Length: 406
Image 1 (cartoon, rainbow, N blue to C red):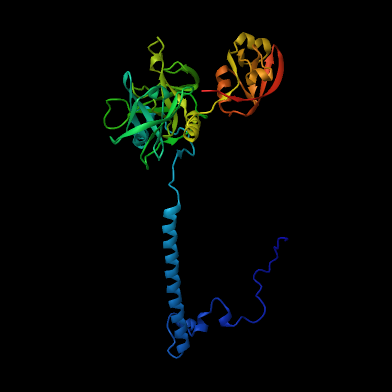
Image 2: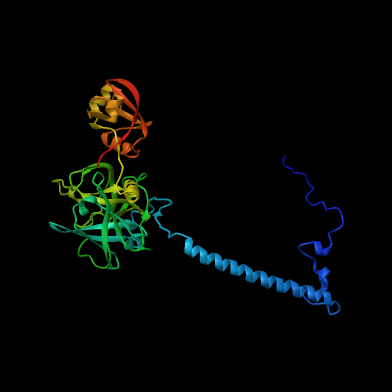
């Protein structure tokens, strides 16, 4: 139907008005009231008085019926609506805290510490070798927590101590050794949860606040302040598993803080602390590493839904391309394939040792670590496009990823 923009909206309707009894409303003058004495009943027109009485009674009845319907609907909804599970995700996980306020005396740090404290728990795990202490982050109101896999591996019993001192029996829902992430569950609802941000837009130099619950602390979790000192680090976990794309910070953490939260200046969780440098350099030993929260969230979703994390599998081993070879083949960096596993997706697609991967789905690959991270963003069964250099010759190949066995 064509749009009508003619100036005839105010044209009066033609024809005589409908009789009063055929309309949904009536003018007050038709009910025996004069405009000059609105609100005053006419003493000479009993029919008008009767009509107003009918209108008032009808209104009261309608209101009563409406309230009854609302009451019934409310009662029904309470019986049939399922319990809500809440996760808190930051709308803008951007660090807004200034370095000045991050010095330890700023109100920003105090506010973040108070906000985060209820969502940080202490984990006391009993093993055949004794007791281990770690921290955990509450991520869902129905009792799910994330912590490090290495602190709950081979446990016989786990106790979760909340910030208010409550002690709850916990159970391990699932463990992913490849990312050093584990999911725990306690039987309690309406728990406070942390706000999950993102590590994708982090920059070196941003403020970082580490919050954990180590053994022996009273009055709430331990809070330390530093900066993001590096990104994309590759380190070994306590179990010797190589972890990629780690966030490095100089915010010191005490023993037992593994599994705690690393927050940005807005109070959003950007990572889960997991490893401390074991370098012989005393200065390097002040560095702490955190798993990016994006990886934590993805693994947690898999474990909660299925009991295990799913990882895509290409079937190669590799190393960073050195500067000399990069110059020889005309690239600035890449991941050099050192081994292709037989009958793997890479082998079936024709990838060979000494091939250099320079891009995945159009995204530049500058190192083996960046290649691993890019693959981690895909699921088993996904098809990816690799740009490689075989010698100096560029090639493109499409590979369907498999699933890595636990």
